[in-house]
Image 1 (tube, helix red, strand yellow):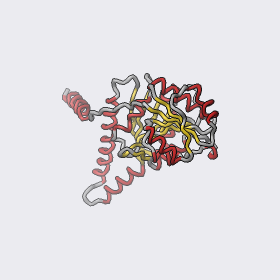
Image 2: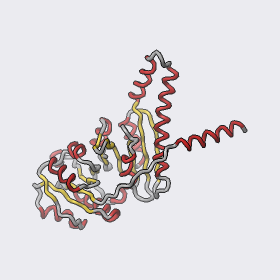
Image 3: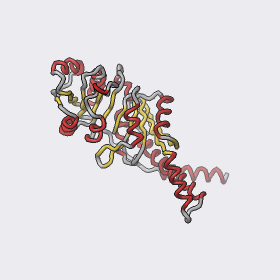
Image 4: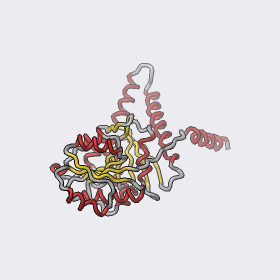
Amino acid sequence: MREQSLDEFESIFEQASIPVLEIEPVTLARVAVVLKNDALDASVCRLAAHLKTRFGSEVQVHYPDTLSKDSVAATTTVTDFAAAPAAFRSTAELVGQVSIGRSQLVLMPEPEDEAGRVVSVDALVEGTSPPILLVRSEIDEPASVFSRVLHSLTGSFQQTQNFSHSFTLVEDAGQVLLLHVVSEAEVADVRDAMRVSPEVDTEEGEKLVEKLSHHGERFLKGVVAAAREAPYDASYRLAVGDIVETVRTELEAGGYSVLVVGHHVEGHSHISADDYQLMHTVRDIPVLAL
């Protein structure tokens, strides 16, 4: 009886220690589309049309000045975008256009053929405030893109605005998994540092690693709790291992429709080395770089 009471007390204490968070939704009033004269242009336009219907977004089309206006018009007529298309001569000019237009999301095809890419992904992600959704395969059903979201957490994931796009874009009755992978190398560094310190013995060093993991889990519980009234399912998982390999294994096993990587620091996008690798190599589903 006493053990049961202790277990109940620990459960109540654990619930009380979960931080109370509020994830602010993104309005998505303005969405930008970047065309590249590629077969994937039609896919990003269909996706933009879906977001326009779903969120009432104004869609701004951007295209390289090597494309004719007639070609752009032929690609976008099916979506009935109101804003006039804007031509750009360089990635830097596109960055300026997106900034001036105050877009809250950028949709961009990323062809496998390097010659057809036109825009530098790295410069666009680093130079603009809104997240960039990279489309590398045909999209026939736009609503399915945000049906099952895998949000890979690295870096300063405690900034709640980093969850806003995932929670806003996921479809009703969809799913979001927050996957926080702790690098084995980082854990080993902490353990080694604790073991060589004369003030901390091996057992205490192991406990510190456990406490760090517990703190991360407690925060993720708060994020999931913030979405408990939402019309979709939000969950989290903590893992220790190689970040890229762990995310890839989860992608293969989970049937996800979009991968979210990166985070914002003081309004600017930050992509870690592991996020960078995932951003450039995942091709079978869209990748949203925050």
